Length: 246
Image (tube, rainbow, N blue to C red; front, top):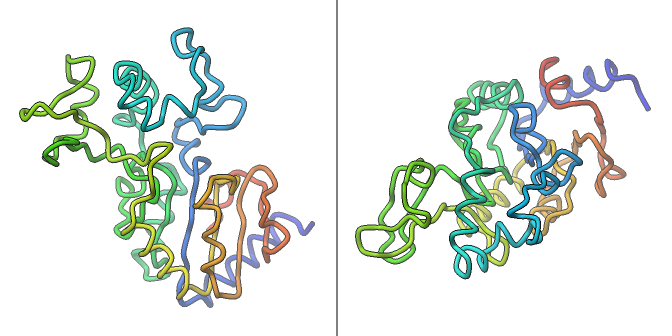
């Protein structure tokens, strides 16, 4: 494998010549801001809290849990999904700069923390939804997103009596159509596709490479992914290490 320095200089050259760059990020983008990812040994799925131990982790963030056991869902959500005091890291900031300079067309993200927007990114397609929007599941009325954390009700409700919920794509729910179609359109036009901080195991987000027609696929992930063999450059270094060089 080429040295880190050689791969960085190759990446810089590709970015300099690029007309349209798309970045697709997963949980690894936010871990350096202090948000645990889902599947690592320190991830959300491996932090054992006694009251949640009897449920499979996927269940706690599922449509079934929200509607069958809303008290359990909101307790888990309040403990694990509170991003209010989390700040963007160097990767979020550099991506926002790249967009501002006209180099980056958009960010596609699996993350629900809103940190890309907090860093200044404008075109962010959130294919798993976001914790930054809350709405009533009955009348559709939107509420300030922090109400799920500040409400004294175990299960927060709207004035109409409907249940409030985060605009997050839970297990058993389909992806937001608009975000997905904008993401795939942007990819079809891109000449550089950077995938960062995702193991590419979650369907259907892991199929995004099928929409990419360009010539430069770059992978940045701590562990190997199924797409490494198709990539022009592969980084196993941390995203902070890579983006601080750009």
